Structures are given as structure tokens and as C-alpha cells.
Image (cartoon, rainbow, N blue to C red):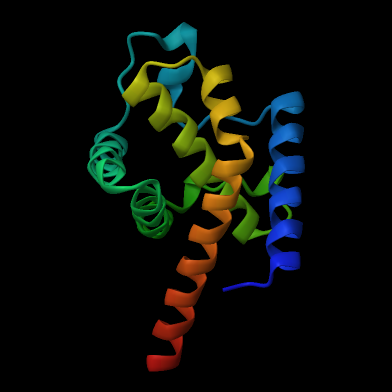
Length: 149
């Protein structure tokens, strides 16, 4: 597990990034979040992800976040166009942004929240801490897989 100082720095960066996104916005991947496309449905792969997240969230938030990160990684491999590299410093940040967008869209889907409420949920200190810990766990899994190869 990362040191407390490192976790605090990550949480601050995530909070600052969330604030920046709220202020400037970023392109939304699925068009169904746009009122102009109110009748549009999310793609099947997104609905499948949301169903997995709902089942995992019934266990715990940590389980939901672990499920999200593993599935977003697969989605990026299958659909590299999902990454918004123009609004990110690097591919890793673009993947994190995609995961955050998926979480907002998931919360809107599962709880019928509006986008602003879902983004506030994503910006809570507790959630940022949990998300940071999930990222740490996911990186550790990737490092173990790389070491095993």
C-alpha cells in the first residue's frame, strides 16, 4: 500500500482534476447523457459493464471499483477510440478520465441521478480515497502479471 503522504497527494490531484472537469467539462463518451439524445440507449457493452458494476456494488464499493478498472482496461484494448487523449496528459490519465466518466454515467443509470449530482458523488473525499486505493490495487495486479511473464 502507498504511503499516507502519497495517498494524500493522489487524493489532492484527483480532487483538483475533478474540480477542473466540473468547471471546464470534458466530452461525454455515451451520447445518451445528452438531453438532445434523450431517446438514445447506451451501447450494449456499456450496459453489460453497468450490470457488472451493480452486482459488484452489492458486495462493496471496493469490489465495484476493482470490477470497473478491470473492465475499462479491456474496453480500451477493444475500443482504443474511447480514450480522450486530447484532454489528458498521457494515456494513463486518459484511462482514469474514462473510468471517471463511466462511473458518472453508471451512477446516472443505476440511481437515475442528473450529471451534476453524479459528479458531486464522484468528487467526495471518501470516494476519491476509495478510487485511489482501487487504482493502487489494480497497478499491483498489473505489476504481478508483468513479473510473472
